[in-house]
Amino acid sequence: MSDLPIGPVVDTTPRPLPARVPMRGQHVVLEPMHVRHAPELWRAMNDPRAEASWTYLAYGPFPNEAAVATTTRVRMSTCRRRLSRLRKQRAS
Image (tube, rainbow, N blue to C red):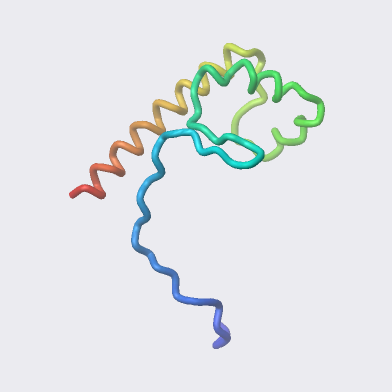
């Protein structure tokens, strides 16, 4: 182990969770995932330039738009449950 400094001490106080609202930037709008995004995601996923992206994902590629919508719905549900538990933990 080295005695060299590795950087400033990090504040480990939990940060507030971001609001689930669109965040508008100069070039993009970042918004919470929704099933209505499935058609556009499906089109983007089928762009030949996106093929290599699947190398780094634990799921996909998807056979059709319906599979994208189903996966999105399931992941949204899982995320909501986790966020709900996290909010309850922070409130107590």
